[in-house]
Structure formats: structure tokens, C-alpha cells
Length: 113
Length: 114
Image (cartoon, rainbow over the protein chains, first blue to last red):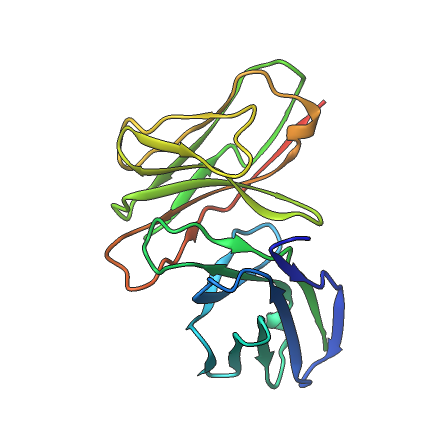
């Protein structure tokens, strides 16, 4: 069993829809949870960062962490074609700069105009 | 512009022919890493470096070498590439001065070993 599980998709939704992306994990020691966005032919870039359980909102994006269920989610409201990308969840034990990140396999998302 | 650069972006080579992929960052970051990205397996860390002359193995180090002689550069060396090293490679950097461990990734190097 992988330490972090993520549905690879692909996921296609119409423009304006709410998108829900999810990851589950097995290591209860993870404390920091991230979502990276990766456009085609580019490197991943950090989109959202959350510590421990709870919600965090940034514009159209909301990250949720449920540590009791070992489940994290990313919601995208009013989705736009520019949101089409692969979304990678990642998590770590600490927030030290050298701390290893454990990534999910990524979900490929397409927003249809 | 703050960035991580990698060269080459695309490389096709043959089994056994030594190659080096360069990585450079201009953010004065202490930490640098190499990852490979494969379908169904996601991003896996190959090697990382905490500072100049300090390197350590990640999850999949077999068949790779690294060096960190300067803070800004972290080349990845494949001394005898094999077809199972065909992959998309990313260099990344991060800093202890951040309140969270954001990784800054380069644009990637797509390697094909025939």
C-alpha cells in the first residue's frame, strides 16, 4: 500500500463547476499538507499549504484536512479553463525546509469551456 | 527572477553512455533535491543536499550520483544509464528561512534511454 493514495483521474468538468480533489494517507504522523499544481511541460508549484486539521481558503481554492480520517481535499469553485492541470497532494512530518515531502501520484484535471 | 533552471530539457541517449543533468538555483537556498516522476508512481526523491558538500540518498538513489560543490548547483549524474531510468526529472530547492517547506521546482528534464 502506498503511503499516499490519489485518484489519477483524468477528471473533466465544465467551466464554472465545483471541483473536488482528494487524497488519503496512512501515516498518522504527517502534520503538514500541501497541494501542488503542475501545468503541462512545467514543474509543480505550490498552490495551498495547511497545518494539521481544518480548512484554509484562498480565493477560489479551499483546502481541507481531516486527520482523524487521514483524508485531505482541495475544492475549486467557479472552475476556469486555466485551472486545467495536474494536481498533486503532498505531505510532510515537519515544516523544516529540508523535510522530505511524500507526494500523491497526481490527478489530471481538465476544465471544459 | 527567482528560479530553478535545468539543462537539458530533453535528452535521448543510449544505454551505458554517461550523462549529466545540470540544476542551478538563484535564490540562495540551502536545500536541493532531485526527483523523478513516473506515471502511476508520482514524484519520488532520488537524492537531496542539505548544503555544500552534504548529500544523502532519497527513496530511489540506485544508478544515480550527485555532487554539491557550490551552493547554487546540484548536478545529477547517470554514469551508466539504463532504460528503466527513462523518466521525467525535476530539480527542486527550498530554504530553512521559510516558515514552511515549500519546494521550488525546475521545469523538468525528459530523459529517454534507448
